[in-house]
Image 1 (cartoon, rainbow, N blue to C red):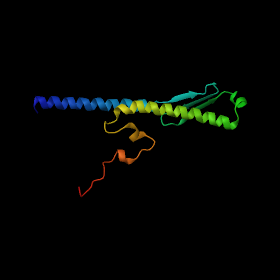
Image 2 (cartoon, rainbow, N blue to C red):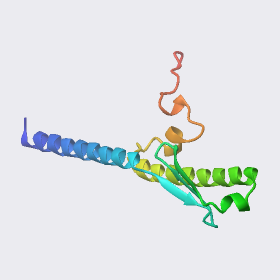
Image 3 (cartoon, rainbow, N blue to C red):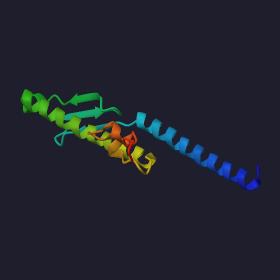
Length: 127
């Protein structure tokens, strides 16, 4: 192998290894993401994990005197939604820089994801 070719191969291998390390670091960070949101009155606190799972709900004892059952359920859901949105934003910030140029983050992880982002277009045999 010529020196120029060897240098090119070493540079490419270094770039691949660097990208693999970035992906590994992002994967570790993804597994540790969580968000805790609390109501403005301090009566409700909710923690959501990396997959959007509710990990903890804390209710101040005063909440039962202040809110009806329906209001309490709505207030808890509000905090869950806020925490889930924060986790989603953290995921986006971690993964977006790793996405190939031709794919947008929302094409792969958005609400209306389809296989189209991963598949080539149909081949027209008459073309």
